[in-house]
Length: 594
Picture (spheres, rainbow, N blue to C red):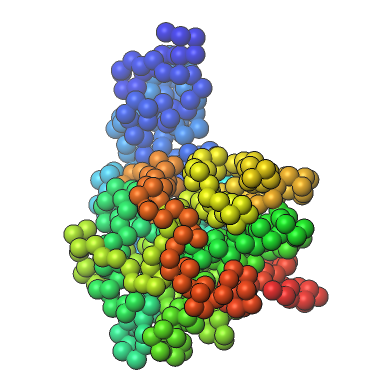
């Protein structure tokens, strides 16, 4: 036995393990799953739920395994009668103060509390008493807060403050009156919430949900007077299969396109196309800023949670944002102008739906800055979860459906478009095209490994025909805050920065599927599989650069002219706004021009 190992006993069996672990972590490594609720490996230890208690020989009472470290010679029992009964009592008390609506709850069949109750054999409620009652907070464009479903595990609070550094949520009150809420019990719309939806991802119950629009879209699909158009974001295809029991990272793009047609959409497009379009405009904007002394570093603007975060927490940096709309909003602009003209339809008789991995896209769709010629660009944004529910509700056999291709002209895309969904993907795609715009030549190796992976902040210095271009990538708003601190201290350090609000990028968006088993939310292994699906799609694509897309070339020839033209600025670019810390635009600040 090495000096960094100790001996412990679990259920009378001897093991040698590394010292410095908690009982829970040691048990997990040895194949003993101790039940838990408030614990998450990415968050600080809360020890609030006490569901993870075990017996330790010599201890006066049960021990919370998530917080207690192992020591040499420790004897642990995980499943004694007393421990099992105590855990049941704890969960039964939680259930006592929980709504009795499992079969009509949005998380039915996919709820951690429900799974835990089942695994403990709880089949009836033993405790009766007063139950809390709060009004739901439906003020936000993106996130619904339902305190009645909250079990006070604190995971959302820690996610918002420790990982995202937004600190919108906190525990208020004492005892029975304790509740999770924004400061001063403000509505989510009036709080510092950036709509990222990570509180939804991390919540074990249904205390946080996205604003649901699936029923409204079902109604539109039954309206024969409308032309129904839909576009699907890159990372949706790498995750939606999980909602149907498929392994994480299964590329289901063909099944998605086929299912959308069966749902009743008239035209099914791929947002990857407008990801290519975004790169054409964004790369041109970067080249213009670098060569003409524009505001640097330029920062990506395709993540709406990040955009709102910058507007309200870093308002002095608004001029650094790219003026490009996101691929979803560019899709809406092109669908309701260029494509509407192609099919001779009044844009007012068209409805455009975006299928997104992101809850903040609902907020983006509602921003008036994204409108096109007085028309709403994106009528509804549905999350991956909402689309999965619609497919199931419509009785479509998603797993066995014959895959189909998207419609053109907004269907063909390069590999650069699909990698938008993973952190570093926008940067890599932009580099591939910016290199061509600057040098007139193609990069020999299109992969930019330095910006791939899940490191919080990634940096690279690129040689572009003798010109050094310094770039940085961050994912998750906590890492974004660190990167902004670097930029403010060293404004000359970078030329171009990509920031995504969600851990892992869009593959970890607030609207992606919940884990279907005992796997943890935002498990990095699952995120890596989703990312691999996108990179594999890029590898298999004959087109690897956005400027190689023939339909992009046609769009510019027939309609837009060239990147950064007057028409492309009108349709594909926008402006962002300095906001106060609560997200409200101060009256004394005039709107910035585009």
